[in-house]
Length: 200
Image (tube, rainbow, N blue to C red; front, side):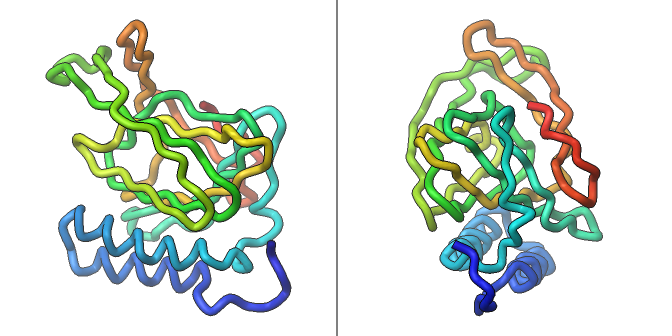
C-alpha cells in the first residue's frame, strides 16, 4: 500500500538503471537479466507509484504510461487489472520484463510450431503456465519466448509493471483455434496520452 514516505529505489532510479544497461549495448539476455533485477527491486516497495496510476476500470484492464525513453529505446507502464480481466494471446517483437506490484497474474506461454513465413497465420502450442506473485518477475525474449497471454484469475485487483524494448504501439494477436494472426494497435489510459482506454 502506498504511503507518504519516499522509497529508497523509485521510478527515476529504475528508468536510469535501464538507460545505463542499454547504453552498454548489451545482448538481449543480459538486458533481461539486469532489468529483471531492477524490476524486482522496484516492485518490492510500491510507495513510488502514484494513486492516479492505480486507477482501473471494470470494463477493461488499463495501461498507464509511466515513462517513454526520449530515444525510443524502451517504455515503462503500470497495468491495472480487475478480477477476470486478461489479454488475448499476443506477441511483442521486442524484449520485455513484467513485475508484480500488487497481487498476482497468471501467464500462459506459447510455442510457435509453424515456420513463421505467413504473416497472417501461426500454429501455437501452450508450453507452460505460471502464476507470477507479488514481487515476482517474468520476461519476454524474442524470437522464441515472446508469445503469451496474461490475466487476473484472482478475486482482487492486480497492478503490474511492464517495461518493453520499444515504443509498443502495435502487437500481433493470435487465435489459437483458427491460427489467424491479426495486428492490433495499442492505446494507453494516461494523462499524458488523454484518457483513452487500451484497445485489446
